[in-house]
Length: 71
Image 1 (cartoon, rainbow, N blue to C red):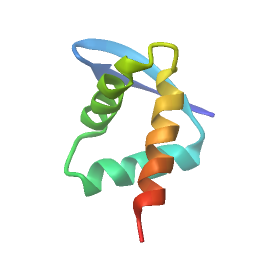
Image 2: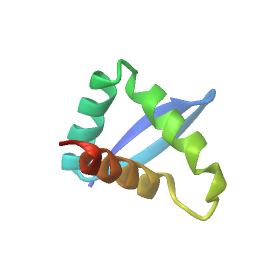
Image 3: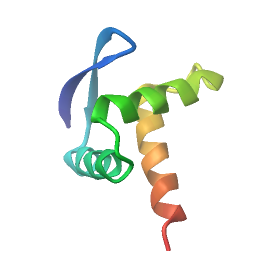
Image 4: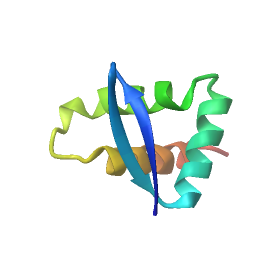
């Protein structure tokens, strides 16, 4: 696990993910033209419907769904 700190909606938070997920998240942010914090903030906003879901889980699910949509 690797922990990184980000600022989301004006507050600092830490996120722990496996290095492979960080690599995929960095690529996704670049491909979507967003900063890493911007992409994670959008994932964070989308999980508001599931308040029991941890941010790290939401990021992994986002990346899995993104990979499954690719041809």
